Length: 250
Length: 247
Ligand SMILES: Nc1ncnc2c1ncn2[C@@H]1O[C@H](COP(=O)(O)OP(=O)(O)OP(=O)(O)O)[C@@H](O)[C@H]1O
Ligand SMILES: [Mg+2]
Image (cartoon, rainbow over all chains, first blue to last red; front, top):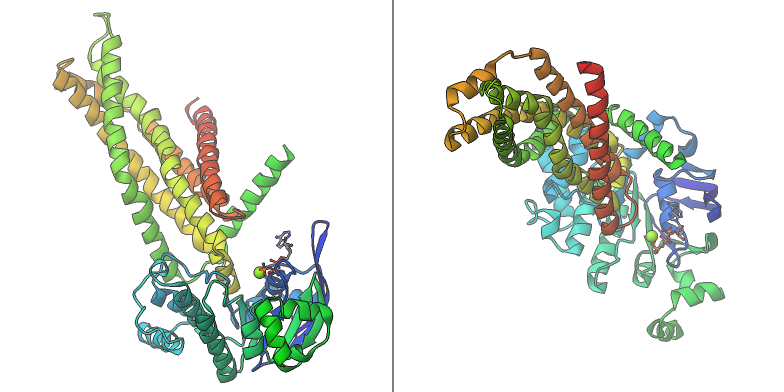
């Protein structure tokens, strides 16, 4: 479980996040939605410790990450898996080596055990034929899947996805969404997904937080979001003509 | 000025961070070997060609400038050896490597920064500065003195060939000069210089790459800055070390 309490983030003289409060539970897909530039990535980077929040606290299963010692942080970090917007695969390594990397760094497993785990992770994301290829040799959707395989290699308790569907066609996007949901249920991870993809919202949103201009504007789930009468939220969720028509059917 | 000091401070902190908290020794060893191959073997070809021709040109120029019958022709061998050991091999090779290796390091690390690969390392709890920069510094410290020695040998040999093939002076006279009055300290001074330059090239270029913000255009700019900054630092250190060690 992750709790955010009164989180603020200021860059120089520019405040990006205002007083965010939220609770994310294990086994659920928690979605953070909002316009481009609303602060989703900044929020996620604060959560995982890539940025220091200006004030407020982030609590991982009872431990305050913002006040934790370097060693405690390291422990929490090893329970975190993150999939970046562009995949962030190491391009000097093959897909297999990418997935093996955290295992080689942080376990004392022998070669065989690592190879087995890599095979398991790659099969879990339905990629059993790309082992020896380099990231530059595979498609965007495959990269995302390798990145997911790498993120789950160490059996993380917390999984973060920054726009997992960006740059993918809707069908591949849904495959990735379903994968995220399955993994969340299967391993009971606390999953947080940044997205502005409305398919994801409806498909996998167990809990949805809408960030608007740095404030938490709305909170709910995928069934309440389509029935909501919050005008800003409606404008954001049903932004296109197609979606406006869809809204009338609810 | 303030910006310069700020950069220098960040540079020092990055170097300190790159020397702390290593992963397992086996992984670090593997990384260093990879960099040795990447930075060393990859530079051997260009270093050889340049050294050979530098030596040849130095010898011909010296020979062409000796008009007086009072100066023995063996001075050509002696002079070529001294200029090569003292200056050409350590400094010129370092400047060439600043261009080749420096831009390579800056663009590699810079690309990893803008594609969030460095963030990915940090998330996993890996000290990215150590993982990326330390092996490059160590590999450079090992390989640069070796390249410098190779360059010395080839440079002196280039001078020899230039003299004998053009018939300026005969081989034995050249070799007599080239082995005359050999000062071991000059050789050591050259090795010290090459090691310092190696550190400068690897760390300054890594610094430029590590703090890239933006996209591929910024990576390009960072690698240009890496070459300029490390070349200037090399010239500065060359002056400081020469003043300290030779006078
Ligand atoms: N390091 C930084 N320094 C200063 N400002 C920043 C920094 N990082 C982000 N910002 C600002 O914070 C705001 C929120 O950015 P953020 O990347 O979180 O948006 P986002 O919601 O993820 O958008 P998108 O959907 O386009 O990814 C932006 O206006 C951005 O300019
Ligand atoms: Mg973003």
